[in-house]
Every structure is written in structure tokens, then in C-alpha cells.
Amino acid sequence: MRSLAEGLVARGVRVTVCAPAEAEHAYDFTGTGADHVHVPRSSDPASVAALRAACAGADLVHAHGLHASFRAVLALSGRDTPLVVTWHNRARAEGARAHLLRLLERRVVRTAAVVLGTTSDLVDRARRTGARDARLAAVALPGRRRRADLDDTDQGRPKLRAELGATGRPLLLAVGSLDRQRATASCWTRPAPGATSTRSRWSSSRGRGRCVPNSSGGSRTSGCRYGWSDAATTCPNCSRPPIWRC
Image (cartoon, rainbow, N blue to C red):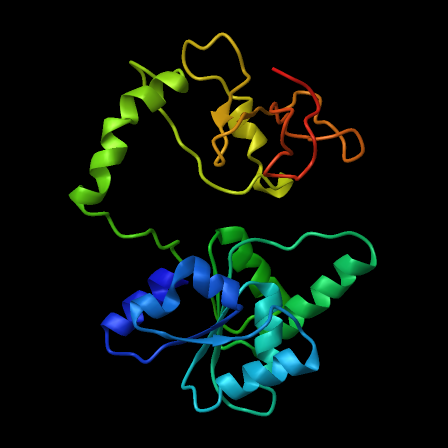
């Protein structure tokens, strides 16, 4: 969202980002030249009213994700402001919640002028649900950093590669959530050429312990299903205690 705001501002477009205050603190939307309006991540009447007020006079509204898109639909009710929505992943649920999510999807895609999906299956799903215009959207990457910003990182790179056991061979880095529907397990279980084990490991973003895929899958009652191995902390991915030590 920040890269989108930055690109639009650079083209002379006035941009207002409606998001919680903590999102502004994390991503610094105003640093791109955009305005920021605090809108809670909620569908209660007060939050929807705040979003509706922020969207007054807008020529276009762009919402990210199913729930934000649904709040935008409610906020724009009775107005002819075009709504563009972007779906980054598919919301998954079971039972009554799954039925509710399907209703939300149908309401959103039939209201939106354009639905953008980051994967072809999301675009197909939007079309099946009744989208008037569904398109595949490329995922924006952050701009290349200046060389001065990379100096400290470059100095520690050999040490980091040695810690990861990737000296003298390519290092593949996958960045993303560890939600089950992401099929990340296929990366874990596929050995690299010449590897003797199918178990892969990487350092956590917190720099403590290692997050190691648990071959048994774990369970929600017995502990971390990713095999977080630092006994002093909980897994940063599922917030559960370690299930075993490596």
C-alpha cells in the first residue's frame, strides 16, 4: 500500500490512506506525501461512518483485502464513487463462517468496479462470484535501496550465510506468512540438489532460535506446529510454545 501511495503521489495524485494509527506508525504513509486518516479496523457503525466521511469527495476508493473491501462497500453506500479492491489471499473458514465469507465476497465483487487479484486463482474466483471486471495485479516490490544503506548489511553477509549453512552454494529466500493455505510446506519438504535431508531451517525474524518445520505437523493443543526450537520464547508465527528441541 505504501509503494502504491508513493507512486500515485509522484504522479501528482492526492492520496489519503485510511488505516489504523499503528499502521501509519509502521509504514509512514505520510512520509510518501499522502494524507493519513485514522480509521479503526472494524465494521462497527462509528468506524464505517469515519470511513464514509474520509471518502467524501474522493474520485476513486481502493480497498485491500476482503474485510476492508466490505467496509468500503458499506461506507460508499448510496454514492457512485468507483471502488477498486485488491485481494492478496483467499479467506478460509469452515461452517457458518465460511457461508458468511462467501456472502461478503459476493457483495464486494458485485459492487466493485474492478477486482484485482494477486494470483490467477483469486481472479478466477472473483469472476465466478460475479465480478464485472477482474484482473491479475502484479505484486509491487519495494524500491532498490541506496548503496550507503547496504554497507552494514554487506559486511555481515558472509557470517549470516555461514550461520545458515549456505556458503559456496545458492541461498533461496522465501518471504511470506506461514499460513497453511500458502502451501509453504512444499518448500520445506523438497531437498536441494545434493542435499541428504528434506528438513530445512531458517533463522527467525526476531533473531532468536530457529523455526523448523515439524515433520509430524504438531497440533493446536500440543504446541507449535512449526517446531519452534527456542524454549525461552513462543513461536512468532503461531504464538505457541515449542513442541520439541532441535
